[in-house]
Amino acid sequence: MTDEEKTALRERILERSVEVEVRIEQLRDATQPISPDKGLGRLTRLEAMQDKGVNEAALQRLQDESARLHNALVNIMRPDFGQCSNCGEEIAIERLQALPASTLCMDCA
Image (tube, rainbow, N blue to C red; front, top):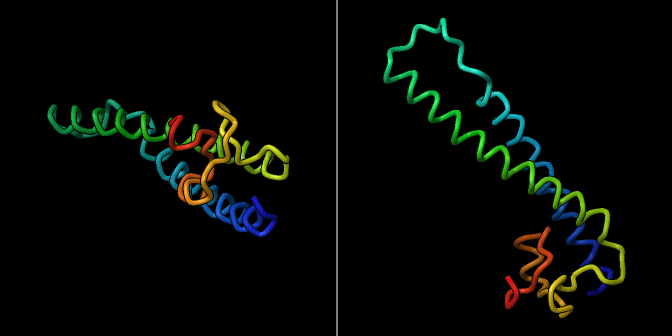
């Protein structure tokens, strides 16, 4: 991987990190506890609890992605960055551009 590709990928990682952090903040608001004194009907309360559960799962996925992006940003200047952690082959730049936190090549994924 060339230095130019790493620089472009670093910018992509930073952009995605900002996107993820914004969405995390939105989901944190959506996963606040549902107050029992809220004037919701029984079905509406159940729907709100279900939505909260879905949002909590999405929040966890985004927090995991944020951690992977952070690791990619820390490791991007290492000589072995962009190599598959399973087989050692180089990960295609197109894959890294689409999924900057990837640690596996297409064959191993």
